[in-house]
Amino acid sequence: MMGQNFELQRQRMNATGIGLAGIDGVWWLPAAEPFTLPAQAARDLAEMGQAIFALFDAVTSLYGTPAGAAGGLDDLLRYQVPSDISRLISQGRVESVRPDFQLVFQTSEVSQTFEVSFVATELEICPSAHGYAQAMQTGYGLPPDLVESFARYLNGRELLLVGTQQWSEFLFEQLAFCRALAEVGSWARVLYDLPVRVMADQIRQGQRWQPPIFGIKQKPPAWNNNLLERIEAHEFEPFLWPDEAGWPEAVGNAVLFRFGYVDCFAPDKLRYFEQWRRQGAAVLNPATFFLDSKVVMAALNLPPVREQIAGSNLNALDILDRCIPETLLLRQETLPRLVAEKDAWVIKYAGFDGGNQAWGGRSLELGLHHSAASWQEVLGQALQLPWPVVAQRLVPSARVDITYMDSQGEAQVMKQGVTRLRTFFLRDGAAAVACGSHLTVAGGTMQVSEATDTVQAPILFCD
Image (cartoon, rainbow, N blue to C red; front, side, top):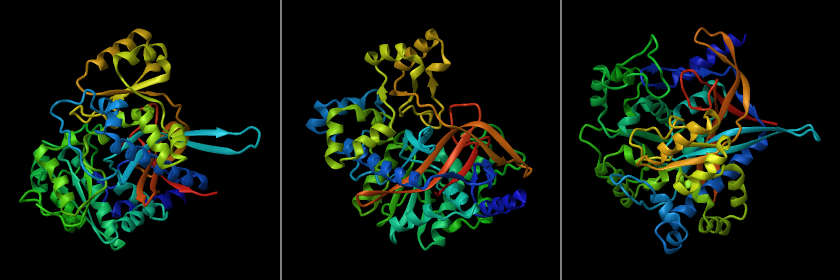
């Protein structure tokens, strides 16, 4: 019976048009059923989202001011930012973010109750996954809170997903999200910094989408490199902004989602975001250079940032101290502590590396995986890099056994998989809406990111 139900789930997900690079349809290991968390967890996440927005607000309002300079914020955010990175500061606040949370499970021996808490190891400002998170909610018959929340936020405005060609493998999941919005009465289109027809030619000639790439180690048998044919087959043409003439001079009052970091776009393309904003567009994630950096989490240590947060939201500082692990900028003065507490720390690129190694766990190094000598060597090498690196206190991630369906429709169990929960946050006045929550479970590694060999499950919150 499970196999029959799952086949229907798979068909519903595939019907949305999702895909990754040359893979059509479901490209991960789908969980046999939604992953259940207590209803209180949904309320906790919304409070965390509100607090995370308060952190972004404090950092953006203080940067470049006398208080920010005197309190060390300006130096922190500028440290080791390569000279060729635009120091663009855009107006507007962060309106959407998708943190990566580690799950921490606790069972009270006194009350015999189960509790779950969340620790945000990343504050992803330009996330993927809108399309496949929505597809999972559709496939498993869950309330479509992601697309409905975005539709309410848009309130009649068009959503324009403005992407970098470097991340073009996510095109189909974004087009699928556009169609899902259309089905609830909203409108969205995709515009990349390279015309789709040019990308299609490059893909067909083997110049793009050649594994190993993010999430895909090797091509599966059904790999399809005919981009235009797939777009037509899924009837996605209406959701592509006409791009043959380049980017438009104006986009009206569209809501912009910047899908790519500032080091992914040419300087002339970055200027469009601010141009469109001045002409009346709204921006979900402003093209401000330091918003892309994990150093923002280290800014939580600075007194002026903490004072600003405390002044804006009485509870936000306590929430942030619980849900963001201690994060330090890797500098010579932090080295002795990291050496002495080797097993308690991880390091990773903060951003601006120019090779997309700062996300997806690609640059992660764990002290507990090193000898004392090799850890010192890794830290020394990281200090010499021409971009910032952060150290973050290691948080033990919850491990779970989760049942998934393999490519033959047979149930399998991933034992003691490492977890990451991803939730999209949108502003709703002073509050935050949490939506599209889903769980990624990886086997045998702390480098958890979506891939063909990881399990994905939508979250069902219930008592």
